[in-house]
Structures are given as structure tokens and as C-alpha cells.
Amino acid sequence: MAASPEKLHELLTYCLNFARTMLEKAGDFYPFGATLSPDGQVAATGGYNGEEHPKPQEIYRLLADAFRSGAGTGEFLGVALAANVNIPAQFSPESPDGIRVHIETSAYSRFVYVPYKIKVSGMFKKTKSVELGEPFSVEVPPNFFNAAEHV
Image (cartoon, rainbow, N blue to C red; front, top):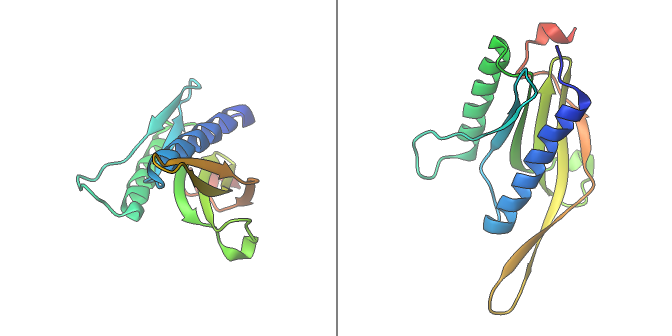
């Protein structure tokens, strides 16, 4: 069974909102995600490998492994994994900085890229605001749900 488009949109919205918050507060973020349970509940998911300053790629891999496992056991109906990336130049992004959300369910796997710019304002107290660009998606091979389900 695949997640509905509305539930996939809910996963995407959660990830984009949290990424924006982290960019405004810290100017960066570690990979994180969201999962969709079979009963339709969206839950936030973070990763921790025991290190104070882990490499983002390690956290991404840790979450991807957990999502793959949960998808395989039926614990998840859909997943979304967000990362702070440089958008590949082949896509001619309006800004090279981007939020990439890998959204996947049975029979659906996409990278959704959202270019962003961080604006800093204020003379004494600096505040950051994040301006999001136009999102676009790219179909990618399944990573979390069994590839055989996608045939």
C-alpha cells in the first residue's frame, strides 16, 4: 500500500518548515526526516551516532538505514529524508544552496529540491531570514522501499 499524495505532501511540508527554522536559527542543519505510519501519523525523525560533531553524511546514512529497515518491516508507509545540499548545476538552480527532501513510498521516489538564500539583517542584533525558491522534483530510483514493489 502506498501513501496518499496528501500524506506525502504533509511529510514534505514538515521537512521544509523544520529545515527553514534550522537555517534561520543556525544557518545550517544536519540531515533529519519524517515518517508516515500505516495509521497515517507523521513523526519527526533525527539521527545521532554518539559524536558531538558528526559528519552530515554519516547521519544521512544512519537515517537512510533506519528508513530502509522500517519500510521493509511495514513500520513505515512513507518516509522523507532532508539534507542541506548544493543543488547540482545541471538543474540550473536559482541558487546553489538547497534543501533536498527524498520522499518515498511504494511506487514513488523523488528528490524535491528547494533553492534558498539566507538574508542577514540588523546592525547590532543580527537576524537571519530564509528566502525559499521554487521547488522542483526529480525522479530517483527507490532507496527505502523494496525495488521489486516499484515494477
